[in-house]
Length: 365
Image (tube, rainbow, N blue to C red; front, side, top):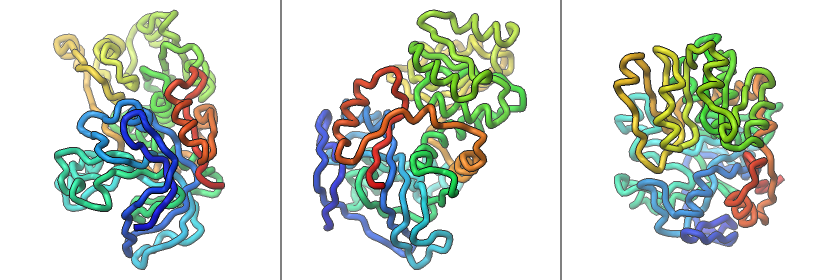
């Protein structure tokens, strides 16, 4: 097997930038890509700190990274829509095309889906027994092989850094699509991290007139407001009452849509209080503890709920939105590191200051 330099999670709490064997077959339906920009996701940091996320447990060395862009260097014989030299971004989750979930159009919840930097769960023996995938390797390495059908050409006016951000932007766009936002709706986003901010800009692009975004960090809500001045209203909940802010912004009616992006169980439990009658609750953040909801309170106002897991069918629209320049992701990308600084970058993100939102590792230039 060929050796490649990569950022390897050896086990919980131990990272190395080293050579590693990667068994990565190249088929007629694949493309080979030189990696340029990789975003550091909260899930990458979580694996580093805890060694697992739910049923996904790191059992052997695993390459991190799944928010990725690059340049095509080789094209499989069956690939028609991409050429060598194309600038691309890659959707990191590849489902089993024959699974029932995929055939229903919900390929993001396919139990046989392989996802960069995600070790196979026990319920996916097809992956655990696959030599090319049993470690769940990600993209923090110079070169990757990926199915062409999950590789998308970037417009000339979309940078490599923005191309890497298509992945977290797609989470927000999937949530907004599920929310069925209507022109003039008012939304609340709980949590001003990268996903919260991506959801806020996606909600505005989807038709929301205003988005109220809350966090315990004054610095983060200030950054969020720069995404769309006058349309994104930041609320520092360490100082201000969120319910009062929502009532003020909506004349006491409540918000049409609540996006829970923090993963804090208490905030999830309180989300219904912020919604208007007939409003919608969208759960995006992954809570560590069970979320208790007052079903009776939700029934008397006929609130709707949706749970979100990653995304499906939104990458082309996310890219089109970036090409249109109708959204601004510049304030979200706050820190940059070279590939040789990858371990340093993760240690920084473990203790990142409040002014840090998203860090990019530049694998090559």
